Length: 113
Image: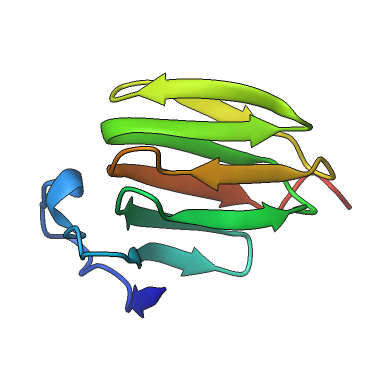
């Protein structure tokens, strides 16, 4: 997975254009990274995915191009551009690219003190 630095502040941009599709790859660019949370944009080529993981925090995933399969606690959710889902904290989840797609991931680290 390729990761890039934070997006430039106080300058407009088209979110969907922040990351490009790369063959056989997952690309991630962080827009905001703070101790209280992160916002990242990712592209996943067809056949790629994120391995099963469990986050200590809720994560909001919004699809901005294409279609994604997000499996939460064994239940498959098929999302397309414009749709979002909250991935609950402490629950196993998997992200699969049955076709290529891009998404925004927002993680807020407060509220769990």
